[in-house]
Image 1 (cartoon, one colour):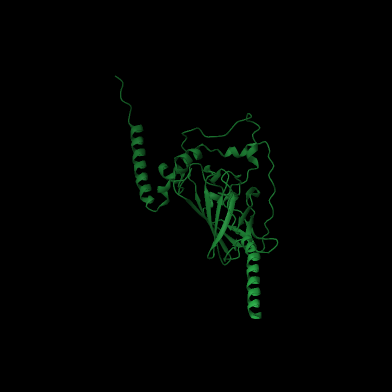
Image 2 (image 1 turned 45 degrees about the horizontal axis):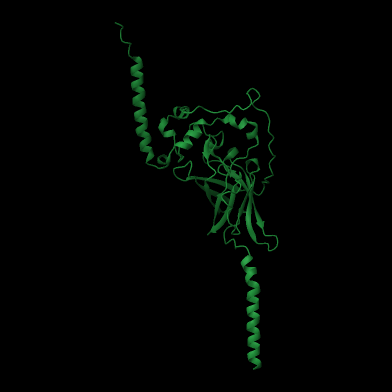
Length: 315
């Protein structure tokens, strides 16, 4: 009988412990999973797409971009002087472009810990242009409502897939993906694959934009670990009057229907091949470029012959 009572007491104690511990476990943040330690000072490597970083892509250079007609029209109307407007002087780079802005920033990745348990719950990313510093949450939290505020850095959550951190970012402001006016809508979703190979860090971006892209836009950026580096918090911008000779309300733009042909003429690329689109992403598009070049050369030759013909005599 005594043994039976002890068994009942032990079972009751186990049940009570489970009842008490259950809510505590349910309230604990999700484990961040495995993966490499990404924290540290990272110096940008700028060899990839260097002309697009500094001095920046030329007007009309949409090569290799899966843009649609709406995106192309928006980009063709863009004028760099728009950044001289007072309301644009202190504008950070949007997250869709922040890894390439200013030639490519040096960054610091730092761990974020839950203050009570000390569990890793995310990373902060510092050094992005205009203080559009980011937070990448690893604790399983949901993304906000579609009606929540959109910001320059967006809202980012991450999960580990083996040794790759997969980051999903939503709630991004209207911005650009390239510094010649190629737009990015606030309805896009940015997926990043962050992985480390010894002292090298690579981030592969995949932007899915239902408004301006025919297919997802993919771009990779690299950094190297630099323990001597110390990324400081950049100075906040100050708006100044750069348009003193313009009337109030003046908005710089290129007129609707403009064609920026200078880029293609400078590098000997057929104009049609500079206009981007999903077709231009694939290797077989080289054959299309050759065909376009042949057609363009024939047309120019015909125009030259027509210009050289003597005018018809008047009767």
